[in-house]
Length: 219
Image 1 (tube, helix red, strand yellow):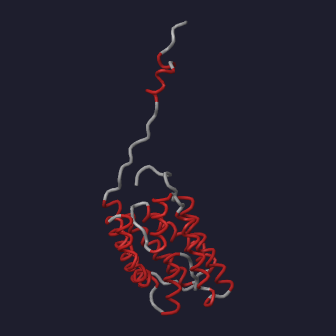
Image 2 (cartoon, one colour):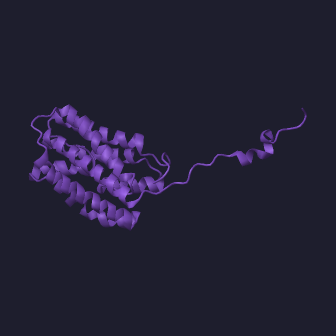
Image 3 (cartoon, helix red, strand yellow):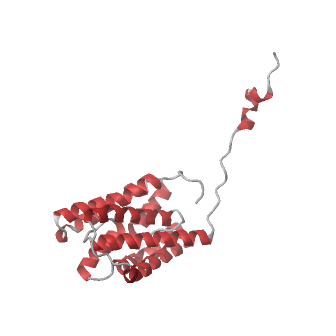
């Protein structure tokens, strides 16, 4: 009875430590597939917000805002306004990140330009567009970010600050979104402005909840 079992010996507890599995990087095919899905989500969200005459935050918001002024496709503008950020993204986050970000933006433009031929939105509730369109844009950004890329602009800056200083990407982007939304005040009604705030909140809620440093195993 007085004999101590080895498994209960405090000196053996160190050998019973459970170690977490090692991170397993995504393959190139997995990255491409996830980024393509994320781009499709973003293009669809832009289309819904455009159909409801709304704006949102981030590069999507700037693209939508300019589309009302220039009457160009927001997907095309999304790529054009991000061009200055591609080099910055490559230098700050690595060549692979920069190339994936470039690929993502070209894909968003391509899908966005092709989507009207496959889908026509004749009527959409502005509230539904703000909430659902904003949410799927958020999930599109999340899918792209989880596979080592960004959507450019504000998103790239937010990811850099998260990686270098541990700042939450969603909260950082929310501050930038406030400035973008305020710039839309002259062209939006009070109701559309309020729903545009809702769309930006929906995007960032997805990122705040799901894109936290150290939450996931893997890349």
